[in-house]
Every structure is written in structure tokens, then in C-alpha cells.
Length: 469
Image 1 (tube, rainbow, N blue to C red):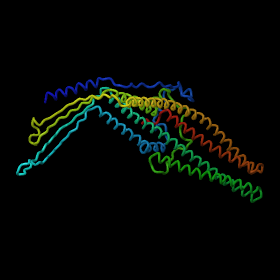
Image 2 (spheres, helix red, strand yellow; image 1 turned 90 degrees about the vertical axis):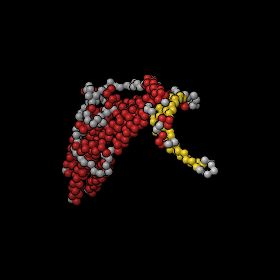
Image 3 (cartoon, rainbow, N blue to C red; image 1 turned 135 degrees about the horizontal axis):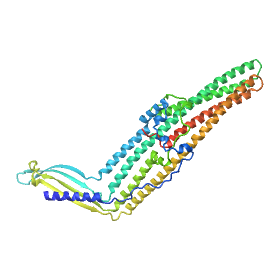
């Protein structure tokens, strides 16, 4: 028995070495050809010349408003989307462990105890009890001759990396959402300040108009027009208060908290951002954007699955062995005659399965083609997002400068219209028109300031920044 065991063990060792040396079926991964521009469209020449990128900065150095940084930190610790992404990494790791286990033998232990009582059929009616005790172990193994399990492990490892890059993409997107949402909140706060200031001015104007009307210096029409200005500012304040509370609720839920208030820091006009942002080389975007990296890992996984499918064309070789002891008496269970063992090898070659294997290979190849297109589309979309963000940032800065001039001009026009009305040189309609124009100009200026900051946030995200610790 010892000689046969040694021979079986040697056979397994030889098959293991053969399996390790066999070629792996299926195509090896090569990165698809991608087209990267020489420079980002919409980039300033001085920014394009720099190899470094603003995306290489940690978010904590880019956003210096302390309440904003605290809000981002809380979001990264408590946000449900990020926690879900982290759980997907654990799932991918567990699935990789399951896949990897297929490369190794499985061993099962077994214990059986059986008893039987029978009549011997003699004249005295005696009965006889017979018992059997069996202890044993069974081992089975399918050598990976064709690389099926190696390809499956390659796919599983790529899925782990894809999940990790997916978590980083969620991190980058969350930081962008929190920053943009915080700036939108501060813009609404500034709009509310403008509306309150306008309401105070309009109430004073209404009081003076009522005094003039009571003295016969003006008509009741002017009073009603002044009232319209007051009511318009009051309605605007109510709407802004609604927007502010809803924006606070949105940011609270992003941070994984129940809806509530949000701490404020710097005013919208005091948020720092450079006139020109270094973008770095376009080719570096492929390595820095987490969604591009995630898409490539998905492609690697799909490519490896072709090898898994093609391996089904080849024979499956399985080795099984069992050994143990069997005895009718516990005292003799471990004696020499009680030992027993068996070993077997089997080869299964698919002959006919109605095209199942061929269809499995075609399905795997189609999925790889889809993953390739998704990867290339992700790259194209990334360059589009960067170009749009750069154009938006530069054009919005220009618009904001014009809006500042418009506000200054509208404010002076409002002052002059009020002087002309009090001097009797103009009707209150002129005051009403200039006041409305000033109010709109101030609101548009706030909107352009918000859009400038939002484009700043989008450039950082589009270039692949935010996921770095």
C-alpha cells in the first residue's frame, strides 16, 4: 500500500509541474489605441506649458475655507455612496478568493458509524448485532492545464482594481459635489443679503413716496409702484430662504447626516481661486482619472474571460483519491488490515453541446468589445469635460468682470434716478426701472461669481483630482 501511495503522490507532482508549464489560452491584454490631443482645448498657453497639474494637489490644500474642509472630511467618512463603493471592494476581494481556490485541491473528511441487528434464524430465536466504523478522507483536483483558472484569477484581480478605482471616482465626485454645493449655498446667502438690502432701501423709498403723496407732491400711482418694489423684494427673500434651507438639507445628506444647518465660512467673493490653473499634459489624464482607470480594469477583466471561455474547448482532467480505515471493532480501527485507499484519474472531452462553448466564447468576445468601446468613450468624455470646464472658467471670469462694471453703472443710475425724482425732474417710473435693473444686475453678478467657482471645481475634478489622500 505504501508503494502505491508514493506512486500516486509522484503522479500528482508531475501533473502539477505540467499544469504550471502549460500555455494559457486566450489573448493577452494590450491597451487599445487611444487618441490624446497635444493640448487641452480652451487652455491658456502658459498653463499648457506646465507639466504639473492642479489635480496633483490634495483637495485640502485647494479648498481653504475651514467649514468647507470640515464638511468634505465628514462626507468622506459618512457618505453612503462612498461606503457602498468600499463594500464593493470587499465583495471583489472575496470573489477573487473564491476564484483562486479553484486552482487548489479540495480535501473532505468523512466519518461513518453503522450498526445493524438481525435474527440468526435458529430455534432459540437469537439475534446478532453487527457494527461498522469508517474514517476516511477524499481529495480531488483539476489541474489547470489550459490556464482556465489563471485567466479567471486575472479577471478577478482586475475586478478588485476596478472596484478600488471606482471608489476613488466616487470620492472625487463627492468632493466636487460638496464644494460646488457649498459655493451654491454661499451664493444664495449673498443673494439674500442683496435682497434684504434692497428691501430696506425700497421700504425707505416707499415711506418717502407716501410722505410726498400726502403732501400732494406726487400721485397715488407712485405709491403703488413703490409698493410693488417692496413686495417684489419680499417675495424674493422668501424664495431665497427656501433655496437656502433645501441646499443645507442636500449638503447634510451628502455628508451622511440628517437634514440640518450647515456652518458657514468665507463669503462667496472671498473664496480663493487662481486666474490660470495648470492642467498638465493631456497624456497624463489617462493615468490620473479614476474613471478611466476603472474602465481599463473592466476591459482587462473582460479580456481574461475570453481565455476562461476558450478553455472549455479542451479536455478536463480530474484527479481523485481517497483513503481511510474501516473496521467492525473500534479496537482494530487503526490496525493494518483496516486501511483502505483508492485513486483515480479522469479525462472529459466535450464532443457535442449544441454550440454552447462557441456561444460562450462569442459572448466573452462581445463583452470585451463593449468594454473596449466604454474605455475609449470614457477617455473621449474626459477630454470633453476638461475642455468644457476650461472654456467655462475663462469665459465666466470675463463675464464676471463685465457684470461688475454693469453693477457699478446700474448702482449709479439708480442714485441719479432717485435724485431726479426728488427734484421733480423725473417720474417714479424711472426710479422703478433703474431699481429693477440694479437688482437684476446684482443677482446676475452673484450668478457669474458662482459659475466661475463651479467651473474651478469642475476643472479640478475633470483633471482627475480629489481622490488623493
